[in-house]
Image (tube, rainbow, N blue to C red; front, side):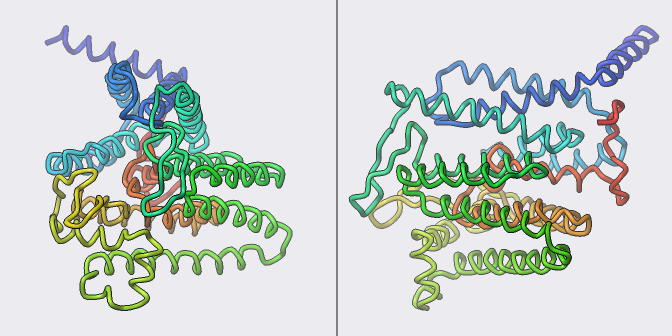
Length: 400
């Protein structure tokens, strides 16, 4: 018994020593880079060694959790949330929510800029590799036809042309948050140029428009810094954008659930067409799978009763149907708390980026996965911080 006690004491001393030297930060940043590198690109076409990388990432994650010092409150909260996510995983057969909250738990102590830098580096490295290997025919497809048209789209080795532009959107989001204190017009113009050039190949209209809105909004925000009433203008714009997002999410969910009854309304019909049939597809999934507390398994792509395939691409509806009402409610509560916290702290630019990203998940289903929606890292502030935001529920000894 005494030998075991001494072993635990020595292990704790080693752990504290590693944290004091900052190794926990290095390890967590390495994990974010490697995990992002593992997931990004054309995952289905990746060589078998990426399966080995997945096992390595699991080991690094466990060690990173070992180097995180939890308070009792933080440990209880994280255990409850992870338990709920595991129940959802058992039903849905999709581990995205478990990974999301494990990563949030492990990396909540990291500075946001540090997390985003590691994420962006992993994203750019893997996606560049995918792009290059596609030219050698290792990753396919390279060109695809837009359904129902003669328009050719270039996916450059990614699973879909929309996926390529989505990953560009994610990269822009993280880059803008990294340089938010050093934004220059020249950088924004360069990103805008790349955005339009990429659209020429992907024909991904929504992604192109969302990147454009982000960049124009960033430019306007920078111009506000020269006005006396900047806070008042930002508050007004925040409430306009927040209201639009809430109404849009509510409308899309209601229209998806009740599409059969509402499809004859011209506005709903037009909305469905503008969303490339996503309302009809979501309604089909809702009718066939319904809603449950902790979700259920649904195929990634499902053959529909009529010609073609149905994909549950609306992020909010996919979270609700595949993962369940409980995880969906947790996500919405945390999302609202994040936005509220940033608002009262006058961090309006971060609010703007999060709200803009919220619109994107109306047409893409990766809303729930932190490796495609890195803004979910903000959930860590709400899960592990006390009411006094200057005090952490996760105490890191080296005062990061």
